[in-house]
Amino acid sequence: MPTTDQSTPTPAAEASTAQLVRQLTEQVRTLVTDEVELAKVEMTAKGKALGVGAGLAGAGTIVLLGGGLALIAAAIAALALVLPVWAAALIVGALLLIVGAVLALAGKKQITEGAPPVPTKAIDSTKQDVETLRTEIRR
Image (cartoon, rainbow, N blue to C red):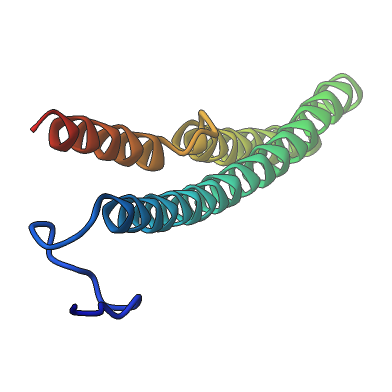
């Protein structure tokens, strides 16, 4: 009577039902572990993208606030003096608003790339694995 080593997979034609079930269990466990690891990696990447986007959006907001304050100072200076002070404040304020808008748009783009925070690749891979198992079971 031949003995089989537990670590070596037995060809399906020679394996008993118990051995086949054991192999299936091990393969499903490995598959699930790999899918969970893929989901972790994907969620980490999306979390980083969301963090960068939120930081850029925050920086853009602060710069926009500074630009707004400079424009307010320009309006006050325009009432107090004729040209030099308010013209300089207006130029600085406009530049700050442009920089702030660019930073805010860059942050919005990063947030859009990171959302929704769902491991879509892992989900798609798991669906494909389930479909493959269903096809093999039907054979």
